[in-house]
Figure 1: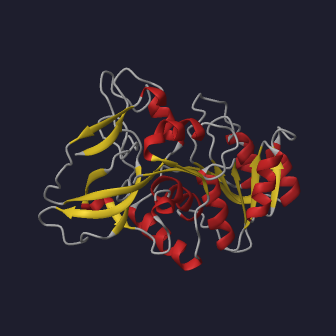
Figure 2: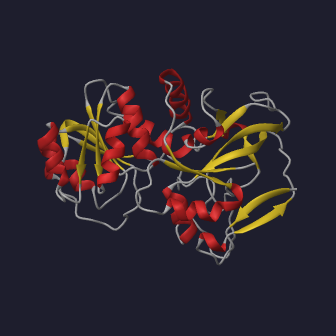
Length: 333
């Protein structure tokens, strides 16, 4: 038997999740079974928990989408991985983006908050050799999203300026990847404590949006414009992100936290010759490129906190707190 957390069909809070024992699944043809050692939380997971986003009415769901662990069994026809291989999962193979791009732990796709999961072999990728399981569990969404945002188009190069919003997992990955590329990173935050954390972790500058509500113009004035903005919020911040761009810069929109339609001011695009690109995680090639980059630069993802499997509801509650810096991870004994 194995253990897994389940969101009941009528539940919308972490406190309502149930820890159950179910039979350990066997991998079929083209599948591998992973003994889970860590999973990480994303903003999308909170949205799915609350529903109706990512939920099918009347259906229970195993939550979470990002997993790291060790292959402990393989199905017929699998030779890419052998038992004992440290792996993470990936969410899509090649362009175009799957529709909807929700991945595991949403709709009719059971998630990974379990002691064991069975995955198609083409949904599994080697974990970075220098990372532990808790660190590796942050790659599939946050890491790959940040990689795609920075290097998937309008590739960031040394000497350029990069900005991102907040201190969540994608923003912290964006900072680490940009700094490793030789770019200057500017953080957009709302709390002085967050500003100090960023400056201590490698940011070249910080703009407090509470002090400067029109922070796009402030960023442009202080930096001369940034070449890339990783917008982790959504429609409410797009116009400010566009105002901060340098000539022919790009806003990579990754956030879903505000989805209500907002008037889009096209003038900053005309004035900067810039562009706006939607980013929904990334391809298998992005994921493998990220693994190699992390190993080459010895980058360790920033973890805000690590929680025990039995305390998964507390991890969800912590993840919702203001001021989280980096990723919230659950380890599985």
